[in-house]
Image (tube, rainbow, N blue to C red; front, top):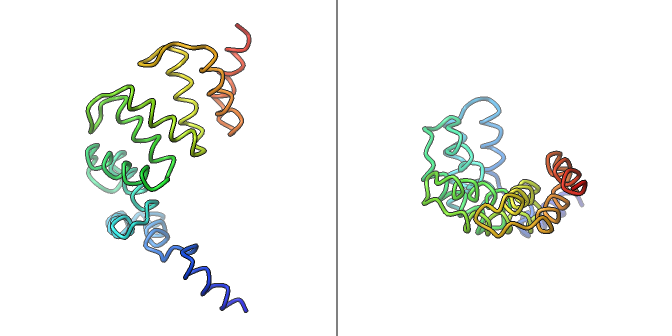
Length: 168
């Protein structure tokens, strides 16, 4: 019976096959060369979690030469594939102009997409943008909304900023 369930899960695509997990295992052993190859293969095979993790490696220069341009392309694939954290990280690159043209409005759209996808940092950064009026129209009401969402998702700074804004 267990074997039958496993086969169904594999056929349904619910168990990733698994360059991603093998890459994670390699990275835990500090074998970043193997990890990056496995994540690249996973990404090429449409496993967007592999794109996201490899993007993070390039973004931070972990086990590979730091390359914001490669990171942005990988985050874009991850974001397009439904990885909310990929949207958030791409938003950070857009906001800072790292590897892509600096574009605050695009960053806001990406933070929104990340927030809508359940990424608390996307909600938090959108709250910051609305609170400061950074490339979006300043709105305490919108800032409060997004800090509240971040707080609901257990983002500590989101909770702090929510409480501060409520006291005004």
